[in-house]
Length: 156
Length: 161
Image (cartoon, rainbow over all chains, first blue to last red; front, side):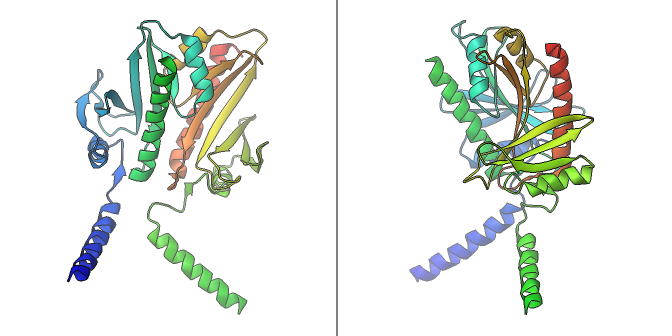
């Protein structure tokens, strides 16, 4: 009985996985696919609007807040790409030399000192006409988070 | 017998394509450099595939008279790469200030990143693209390639090249 139950459960989950596979894409055109992805990952997030009226997603990983800006939008919708963004107040503790060093060492993300002397890392992602699978999007998100954590570690 | 074997192989491939919903026929994949040379051929852009100093795949393509390198990254034993990088390097006569580099990186130049290496006086401009396991469509890659060409033009104007 137990074996049979497990067997049925396995079939059910396989069927569910197949059905879900066709839909599990992250698309900048649809910000809810980004929040759906983050929800599946167990990451708290919320949707907002940025200063120019485009979608904006905030999420938290530990204590660290992250932003996802949307770009190449038409009338604040139907966007084509997005940008992971994270910034820190450094009170002038690091300078353009430090940012340059990180830009030399890192791929994918850009590091800069903004006009408020904050250290900013961002990474642009084209999710494309077909969307990006959860696996590939997770891979990029993990790269970004690890670069941010590495930058923090180097500042401390 | 050989023909039969080929037919079997073709049938297997058809099944694989049918089930591999993530991978599409016109996708470029860093794990398969030929998909890039196919892309450039379709676009009428001269390109040649070779290997870089590390033994990884390496493509040079010519666009409007300029030659651009495309490096492959995150490879395992010089194959199965997961990302590519557009790259441009500029040997400067004078040192370039980190503040100016930061000014570039703070501007509206999405996808591209600049840095300066003082030991050899070289300014670098890079754009990384993860094709990951599912690849990206030829149309999307074309957008990124054209974006890169624009970024190079903007950067050269910025540095007075």
